[in-house]
Image (cartoon, rainbow, N blue to C red):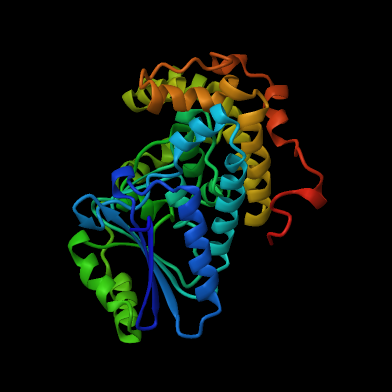
Length: 361
């Protein structure tokens, strides 16, 4: 069976990510299938709304999407596979398609929602509904693999309240449905037990109206770490540089500050600096321009230092291939990253007329 199940039921287009053993991590083929369905339904008068869910190991729901297929990235680097370039160009095009989709776009964010899963859920327009549950586990953990929060992550994290975006981008911290509301990355938290019935009803106009009413009536759960630590997050993560953020955290007496500093010390020093610059630039950009910038950046992640010398290749090796959790970051220390190293990621390798995402926006 296909890794993406696309069906029309009543007046709804329904998409199920169907790769449960991989927690629905996106392959290039899945990105193409999702794009093809959304493009076809965009202009189909029978389809009035689109809903997306993930397949869990025990059946529908329970996992949404764990991100992009990073094992494919590793293999593609070793093989010199040109599909690595296609992956990012087509994924970012899909993110932009979701953002500007002219019909209601409903996403059921049950279980793991990371990286590429955020890219197909966080960007919905004014008529979108992003429904989390008590099982939602969200994160943008890219700095842990020597990457940066892509899929438009700079754009949507920059629009979180205060400095929550910088905190989530740099730390890769996992957070639940209640905190997703605080970060403006979900619209409601509903019990996971309700999702199967809501999915069955969404094919009718009446069912969709009932879903919107249910979302509006939903009671926000108890707020979690993001709300509790908001003052600290804004104070530390509003500082001008990564070195300043870490120094201030390490000088603070609280256990939270010590734990946060220790977490940052494990991430790629280079990509922490690149990520902070990315989020702060994206705050003043359209999504299309941010995605073009991210396409430049991700090209440099794999080609500025090619092959196994790539910071991203090394991060993926340590986390998912050898699983030694001992990446050999270059430079090793946050304090050793120079402005020139960071700025190299923001120089586009293409002239504007030949950029892979020149058609966006």
